Every structure is written in C-alpha cells, then in structure tokens.
Amino acid sequence: MTGEEISPRTKIFISKATPGDDAFATWLAPRLEAHGYEVFADILDLSPGDGWRLKITRTLQDEAVKMLLCCSDETLAREGVLEEIEIAKDLSRSLDDRRFIVPLKMRRFKKLFGIGGLQYIDFERNWAGGLTRLLEFLEEENVPRSYARAIQSGWAAYRRRQAVALRQEPEVLTSNWLRVLTVPDEVHHVRPIGSLGEKRSAALAKESPFPVLEYAGGYLSFATASDFETAFPATGRFETVWSVAYADFNENGHPPSSLTSIDARRHLVNLFRLAWEMQCRKQGFLQHIFSNGSAAIASDGKIDIGKRIRWGRQGQRRSSVLRNIARKKVWEFGVTAYPSLFPFPHYRLKARVLFSELDGIKKGAVIDDPRAQHRLRRGVCSAWRNRAWHGRLMAILELMAGESPYVTLPTGGGSYIVLDAMPVQVTVPVTARQLHELGEEAEEKDISTLDGFFGEDEA
Image (tube, rainbow, N blue to C red; front, side, top):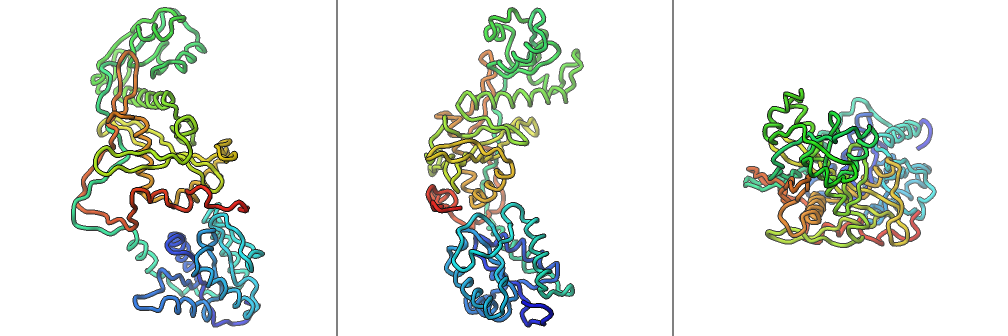
C-alpha cells in the first residue's frame, strides 16, 4: 500500500493452519482489533453453509490490505496455506506492495520460494514482543484502522466453544497428587557425642544415606542414633536428644525445644522432599536444578532414547516415551515433587522437560540458557495433548514403583515413607468430552516429537 491513497481494502488477513495455529489466532486477532484494525480469520468469519474456500479466496483477493502468514514448517506444508501464499504473491505485484505478505515466525521454518527474502516478525521468542513489533509495522504501513470499531465478541465465544464439551454423566479424573500411605513412627533429634565442627557437620548431612536436617548442633531425622553410627562409623558415637511420635510432632511440635507445630510441619515437609530426591538419585534419575525446584529426569542411565514404557495395571495398558529427539535436540521428561501435609499427606508432581544438544544420535550437553529451554518447551511440548502429559507422568511412576503398586522412600533404620503409585482420583458429576481422541500409540504420533521429521537442511 502506498502513501496517502485511500484503499477499499481494510482487512488484515491471517493465513494459518487449523487447528495448529488457532490458539495464536484467537490471541492475536482481538488485540489487533483493540488497536482499531479489522481482522479476518477463518475460525471466526466462516458461517455454516459458507463456501469456505471461495469466501477465503475472495476476502484475500478483494478485501485484504495485508496478509499475516503464520510461519512454521507444519503450517507452511498445508495445501490451503500454500494456495493463499500464491494468491498473496500475485496481489503483492498487482498492488505494488512488496510488503503485502508479513511472515510471523512461530517456530523455525524452512524458507519457501518466492517469500524467502521477506523479513519476518519474531513471535517465537515472545508473543507480546512480536505484537509490539507488528503494531509498529502496521502503523508504518498506514494500514487503515478505526477506533470506533469494536472487538468482535466471537473470539471469546470461539475459545469457549473449543475449550470443553460437557456431558451430564460422572467422570473419574486423575490428579497429580500421590497419597502418602505410611510414615515413620517417630522423629528423632540426634547429635554426635563431641563437636564435629561446622563444615564436617554440614558435610555429614550431605553424605547421609537417609534424609536428615541440621538442627541445634545435631540432626532431625527419622533415623535413630544407632543408624547414624552404622552410617558414619568413622565419626564416633551419637546420642538421641529426644524422640517424638510422628503424629504428636506433626500436631504439637516439640514445646521443650520451642519447636511450634508450624516449625515441625516445615521440617517434616523438608524431610519428605529429601527422601524423594534421594530415592530418585538411587534409582538412577538425573537430578537437574530448575529455577523453582530440583527435578528427577529420565536420562541416559535410566532409559534409552525413543524407548516406550508400558504402564497401567488395571484396564487398558498404554505406553509412553520419556526421552526422544525433536528439532535436533534431545528432550527428556521428569518431575518435581512438592510434599504437603494438607489436607492430607501427599506429594504434588509437576511435569518437567529438559532439552540437551544432540551429539550424533546421543545426548550431548544440557542447554544452559533458560530462555532457550523455555522456547523449546513452548515449541515442542505445546503440541502434546493432556493424554500425552498424563501418560509420561504415569510412565515415570512405573519406573519408580517397578512391580510394586507403591513408591517406597527409605528414611533410615528400616523406616519408610510409602506412597500410592496411582495418583489420587476424583469423580466429578459431568464428563468433559475429549475433542482430540487419541489411541494408545497416538500420543507419540506428533510431528514435533518424531525423530527424523525435521530435514537435514534445517537452518
């Protein structure tokens, strides 16, 4: 579009793949409309009975002032998108507007003939940052707008329609909580007879084969003094300062030591956390520190890349992959466990995905840039359905429990924290109909998680 000419063209046309780019389109369109622009996207503007391909073509040919092209390898492989690109290339020439096509980089993509030289606006790093640059571009191009134009209510309505469909019948839902079934009988305050020194005392806590917390010249633990003497024979004798039944400690703390119930529960939660992390290390999971917690990652020593883990002891058996290759990177699935005593003792599991460089066909160095990790998680994992996330979580628990229905965390002296390996389930009065039904193997039939999908010439 040139200079001060008044154009009959007013619409910003979003060229995208359905359903892959729908979430982005419903995010972007109302924000453009809030700045006075008129937007066309097929998910909203096509009515029942419309000749949808003809309407799309006529809108692009006769009403579009710019075409925003969502760019990823998946989108640019769609036949309908390729047809829209060809129409837009002709319009760019006939309108004498070399910037009629505006590529929006959603993910890394191979350049297409005829649009390879166009400068894209980067939405891969940050959608908000991409929007800022897009608005600047539209203003520079004098794209017509009107602040009297209202935001179409249909965007929100579309998102609601796509979110969930309900049936009036009960449904059993699986949570990410593991119920604690058994706890140790007692909590002990144990200390060495004779001073160890601050450094040696801290080192012993780190070297301990069972969970301990430094406390008042000694340690809080579920283990007894004799357990400490067995674990650290070179340290000498230990003594028990006091012992309290677990239930009493949880409820009342230890008043003689000025430990309130709040202090006691905080210590118990930390001991629970240490017990989980120590058992994960013992079982060969990689411990990786994220910004808000340590995660147990299924890595090299635990499972091969691409290997499926079968899980589900009752009903239909399924299988899930915990390590694979996507975008020439290795991704590995893991969990962080957050213990809690309220409303009942349980561990809440948070899913984690760690990306590393690909060294031939093996895992290379872990990518140490948090922003790069974030971009990869958003690009690769956004295509995973809830069923896939659930399957990977269940596969992790299968590895931890083995043949047992329980996850057992040793706490010293023959005591254990025992968890139900099946997450807590709840029954709700309505059923959310799954819009994307997946078979047993379908969770991995996803172009973003198949080794070899991305070509060798990918930039």
